[in-house]
Image 1 (spheres, rainbow, N blue to C red):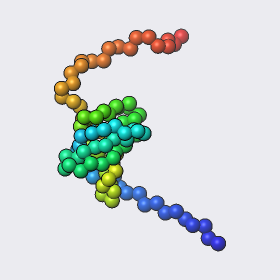
Image 2: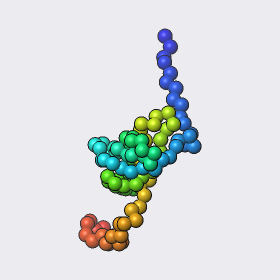
Image 3: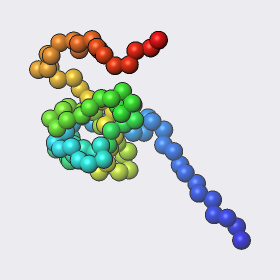
Length: 101
């Protein structure tokens, strides 16, 4: 008997396509319903770099979505565009917490 080998074909990053859209709804498990500028609605998840850098996404945010040309129903949020109307100023300095000795 021969053991079945699993062959995975990885796609080059250049083959992924990018679209811009608007987040319509936040879904469970860090997924979002996004309406692309073309009018098409997809389900997108947050990219690892956005999670790592604690970039929060809310309904109404403009985002860039990366998709495979083979599955146009799912995508990955790779960038949240800055909101022009948001001018809250700089973040206040951190006060408190644990001090090192």
